[in-house]
Image 1 (cartoon, rainbow, N blue to C red):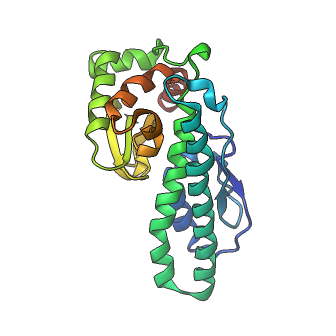
Image 2 (cartoon, rainbow, N blue to C red; image 1 turned 135 degrees about the vertical axis):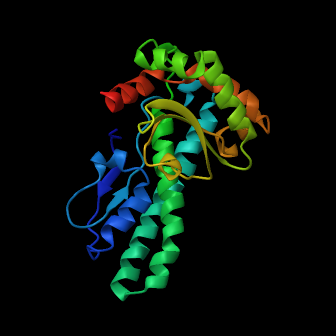
Length: 245
């Protein structure tokens, strides 16, 4: 699942023995890896452009929230992830194993935040461009088989997202091992791959307060109810088709 501009290459001459560890921890889900350079050195993140204006998802999500969410929060994950990689380079050069281990949490958190948000933006689409239209492809049929109906899936994701303590994400995933759809939650900015290597994210909903508080205050269920009006099921269907081909 290629995410355009998800990663851009920066030459970081790290010892090759550490390179797979750092990339795997930072990227979280190597299915996004078409943007990861295979050349010597690590990759760094870049903030992706949105395929719509900040106000295009109103009234479901306000333009102010989208601007802050993208420009401030997502950008912070990108900046902190790249800073952690540079510190990792220095730690490896010094042979400081303690620092290398300590940096893994920052790489996972900020790299995960970058991956999760890059998926999230693609899961949204303005209503006048097809946002909210239900899936009619094989994904729609599989949803009916695995959950009973699209309405039952939405209710399940809303319930699990509302019940998630603290901050995190609720996901519709394809479990490639069991060949079925599943609903999963992840804490903080953990990417879905932390719940299982066979899980492919089709749809992720951010339930951190920064995703909704300015508009919905502390009423997370209202945010979850309205976000379905701008969900891009076409994108989720394309990922599903690719992963099941």
